[in-house]
Length: 123
Figure 1 (cartoon, rainbow, N blue to C red):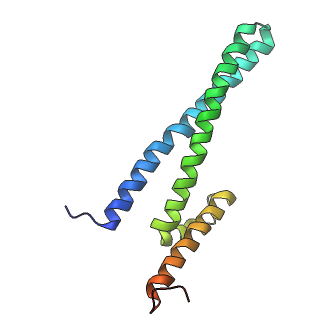
Figure 2: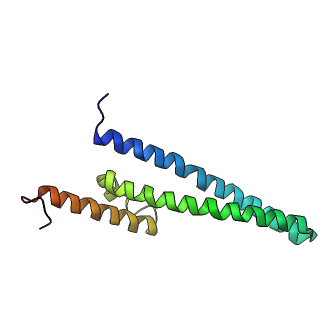
Figure 3: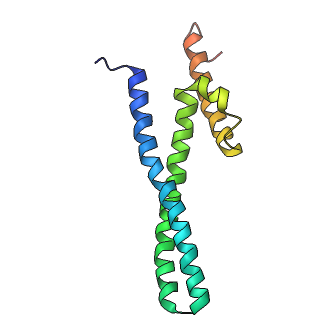
């Protein structure tokens, strides 16, 4: 098998999406668990529920932050590795993702201008 830029970009994205999907899934489930713990604390007043809530809240914060960071990387990969795809679906997913995708496309356009320029520099 020949190692090409296309293969490497696909492997990179496969790693990123595999890493990323863990965190939103975990965050969604943990948000439900935190809601239940807070409701139990409010209903019963037992401090044990509050302690467990505060413990899991810290883990939720870390998982949520890791999901955001890996999502930013993933959005830039859409913009740089799949520029045509990003152009077609860029306006649809969300406003924040659209802005990040546009930034990635701007980077791809800069590289394209550099490649097509006779001197290899920006015009």
